[in-house]
Amino acid sequence: MKKYFYVVGIGLQNNLQYRFNYLTRTLFSFIPLFAMLSLWRTIYGNDRGGEHGGFSQAQMIFYYLLVAVVDVLTAVNEDDWQIAADIREGNISQFLLKPVDYLWYRLSLFASGRIAFIAMAAVPLAGFIFCYRQYFLLPPDAPTFGLFLVSLVMTALLQFFISFGMAMLAFWLLEISTFIFILFAFEYLASGHLFPLDVLSPGVKHILFLTPFPYQLYFPIQIYMGKVSGAGLWQGLATQCLWVLAAYGFARFMWRRGLRKYAAFGG
Image 1 (cartoon, rainbow, N blue to C red):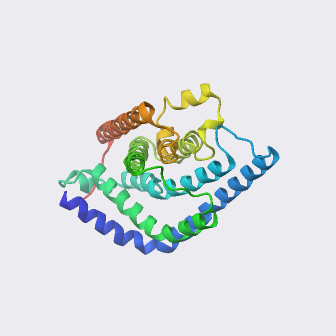
Image 2: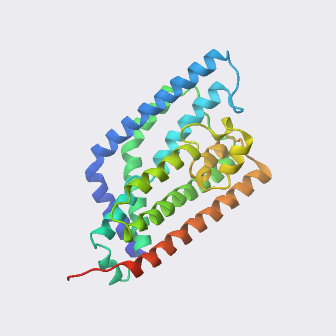
Image 3: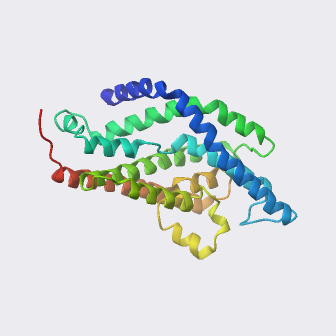
């Protein structure tokens, strides 16, 4: 494991060279969030304080604050593009000749990227939350917060393993950007990033929960807000864990099949 901790350290040094890019990316990511908050304020203003999907206006604004927090902590930024480039350019050959597991190597870089991004995004994120501080609430209790953190870790792993598996398409295809954008579109809508899934019809929501997407953002937020508890909470955590294992198996399967297709020349 020491070699992967070393990779995390090297990754931190490399990522901190792009701290200005991280800062500007964080600042511009708040623009659509401000737009969504303005939209929902208008909707609730026209409804004179009504509820949508079981959310009051204050809860809806708090939901989007948590979206910003979870997104900063868990989102996969450019890892899939970098993995595809490694395959396309033959850089993975070095990992086939050394006692280094490429998946764990990339996971270590993903962790270092998140740490660097959080360090750079902390100040603007805190400023964003401060602007809406009257809506921000602490978790109901310590156990709930602990389960939220557990779910948050599984959210990050789920996002990474799915992205890793999709990047493996580079073994067969020269350009995989179309597939990455399609996946991103599904994740953005079905994970609850654009709006909480509660505003959808029960049938559509039930279908979405048969996919891994709600567990990539919506579910940990529901835990923090106390909207899921008891048996439903434990069932959701177990389901999320199963999706993480399934995504890991998918990533491993795509890697093994891809290596059969891979050929590198030169030395």
